[in-house]
Image 1 (cartoon, rainbow, N blue to C red):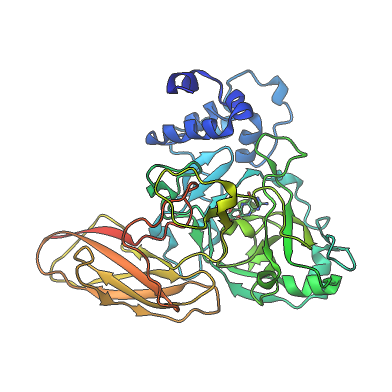
Image 2 (image 1 turned 90 degrees about the horizontal axis):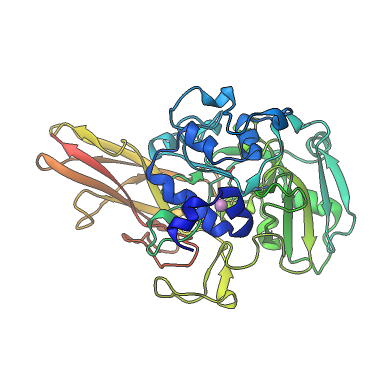
Length: 441
Ligand SMILES: Nc1nc2c(c(=O)[nH]1)N[C@H]1C(S)=C(S)[C@@H](COP(=O)(O)O)O[C@H]1N2
Ligand SMILES: [Mo]
């Protein structure tokens, strides 16, 4: 399809026919900041409802093209309620990433946690916490059961862990040729503290048959097309990951309700793996006697080539494998890129490093484009699967333009690459070194 045809067709029409082309068309526009007006021009009523956090009962009476007053007042960059400061990459479905300097807290506050929606979340006003149920079933479940949130809290021990959640596509924007999907730069990662029941305790209470190999989740959100019978996503993890101490069915984040966009009132959290295994608005868990086969389980979703491929290669599904643990990575969260700093004052930099299922062994920083490196101070993680804080004090030889680079190495001796790693068709697993610009005056 030529660019011209893409531009002259209605986005919804195009979504129905060719979602990839439709998505591409939205990203092509990202050169322009996404303003409220821009957002509304291209949004369906469903997406508008999601942005307002409520449906529009008299939608059929709304004049075509009318922008709801709640959203129409300004041409300021569009922002999501409760997520101010995040950069919106897509509004259908809603996806927003966090600038590095807003990830500076040890424990990510709810308002700074990125949002990655594959479809349309349940309407906020329809979420009835007291009436919410979690069903546990599947062919490898001995005694299928349903729990209210109160029952989960009552029957199972409570556990709190700080857990890193990173979207498999974080860093996708750097791949060439470009990969379809949200053009995440560095901000699809967070490490809040989650409280809930251990997934293991709940599964064991329902009985796990000997042939169990996988679990799968289902959430209350629906497909981006608005078709209520189609799931947005239904993924899962092998039994070993599901049974880890840190795999939680969480009802709280940072001691409060989980933010609406992050899966209130209940979500699965399996830290260290692609964020897509941590199901939001959790309604149902199935114990499977085969690899879970829900929406977005099969390649190319969340899969990479089994063998490295040349950029741009068409990789057949059978040559792809599902991503498990995420690779070692780090992010400089202070100072903000682009600052000017005085020559005679040491510069204190800090950030976080994480390594999927592993821990981080060391972090090094460079001010000369990787020619020389110095060790940063690295803290231990508060618990397994949490990110680790690094700090370093830098001195600069003379005024001018510098970049600070950070490079983490995991407990198996594997380091972050300085350039974008192996190209893959969907642009997953970019763990290249993060860098910030510093002017020394
Ligand atoms: N029900 C449901 N769960 C979901 C998703 C979704 O769209 N629906 N997105 C997944 C993906 S791809 C990621 S990266 C994480 C993002 O979590 P967050 O939006 O809370 O940051 O949620 C995962 N869980
Ligand atoms: Mo994701």
